[in-house]
Image 1 (cartoon, rainbow, N blue to C red):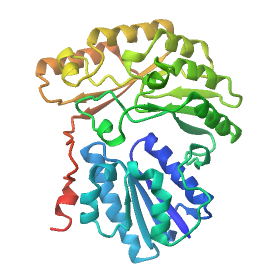
Image 2: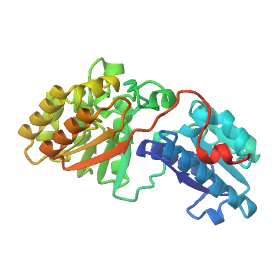
Image 3: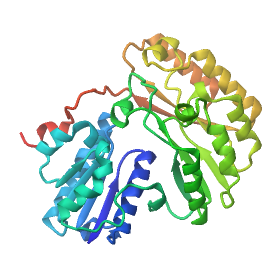
Length: 345
């Protein structure tokens, strides 16, 4: 049978999609990039903010149209299902199987039950068996699951659970396999890469991990994303500075600079610490590229808070910057996207 995939949301989600592709491939299924040729379509959804939920609903409905043609089974997994599985089962009966994140350990069992296949060569998601979908030159390396920061605007901890680091040995094994496949650029990801290791080693271990990754033959570039300012240590800056393989690039989501707003966001940094770490990075690595993300319109943000943020951005001169409107997120399991509300009125 032919299987087609749609992966929505972040790069961490993409890694899961690659693992699922690997599972199907190991069990003898043919992977296709054309939905019109697929007997099975698998959608990995994002449920992070309102616009992502809306995109996921629209995509599910779009893929459901292929069931009128060749597609026999439509399977939906991921964050949206984790948040709203019961609602989705009622709202979109065209979907044959919804699988939440907490059910991934039984994913293949549920798929087998659905399609009547008894193939069981690979029954678990496995980083080592994933199929890289980003081409021959670069790949993502996920070093942790979940998040324990509990920022008040973010639903990730309620979807993905608490922060859980992968063992360094397992990460390095996967990295070596990627290098053997010819991958030249490694992009290290997690919801918060700079918290890596705290839960299992009792201290931030990203710097040590990056050092070990640099020793693997084959990689020309290594970059890491989502480095939170409060855990950017002197050791980490030094590792980036001294290793030619590591891109001189810090993707540092600060979200705001007003201490009042940062406190309401439950962020772990304040204005002074953010400014200090930026100064330190630029002093130690003069040619560094700095990227950040900001949220505007957070509840309680005043004109004074906004002006403070505006002036900070103007004087700091980030090399790359993304700005997002605040999206109110619920913590319950009721799906309230526009299309879902009106779908079967």
